[in-house]
Length: 458
Image (cartoon, rainbow, N blue to C red):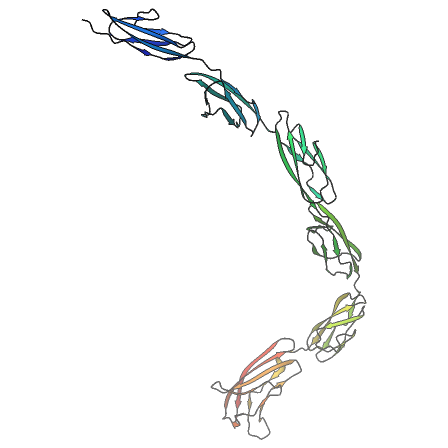
């Protein structure tokens, strides 16, 4: 008795049309395929689904096995979509021809939205079961035009500007104009946009703002008359920036007209690039021709006549020693050498000054004050008091103080005729030596300081 054989077939059960499948037999005995082959394995290339049978013969004991090889058709994959876009744009690619789709981006949808920044090649694997096809689609990326607008963007109200676009083949402005050039006359700050399209059909837009400024209301002042040598502040207003014909760039500045007669000052006042002008006229009146007389030398205490001419009013200073400070010819009695100044004004109010020098001989000095060094207050009518002797009239103020030997003040006076009778608190002091101090301020500003001893004799 023989064993019943075990018949089995292994191998590919699905192939794509035109491909081969390898089938292998197993089991103990002799093999016979339905294709007529008697080998343990065969290669078949079916064009339609086909069944293959294996017969295994083990000394008369027979067993069979069958396998069906399915045949799939290759798909024809395609990609539809435009093949050119503008930089920054996107497009949709659509695959067809199969049951499933796998894009080179990893997407598995039928349609794919792409936005390439540079020329790119996209592919998709189109599958029907195990059979697949690959389709390709190349996308060209065209650059956008660089649109530039030139022209005057700073206008004065009422003026026009010619704006010119470049960088593209065709243009359309937001004003509706389709030329490269457009003339605009805005009354307020306005933005203008132009879209430019190049030969590839790609478009780009740019905008330009045109600013509009008011013409300034230029004003300059004062129109006035001034005396020769007098400084004048002139002013301008009406705008943001100023430029005078002198070169000054401030709204106000000081001028000194150099000649008599009229001088015009012109200012250009601007707001942005809008400007207007104004002018002011300064008339220079000549000053009077003054003549001050009376330079002389006098002895202290004497007088002299000084005078001035050439005007309608006079003002002298300093006033010390003058008989009149508003007349043309005052009498001067100075105590010290003095330079008298006179301001002379004419009918226009223009003033000029001159001076007169009066030299005083035997002026005030240190020898103007004398103080004795001893006295005897015995009421005999001789040397009963210590008296200050003041010479002349040069002393303005003085202070005379007497101290005892312990430094106590026993007498003090500011009287020019000061005198001490030797008493302190109505009591006669004992004989002895006392100390005095005297300070005197002179009219010329000098100061006399004296110190010494006074002997009280009994």
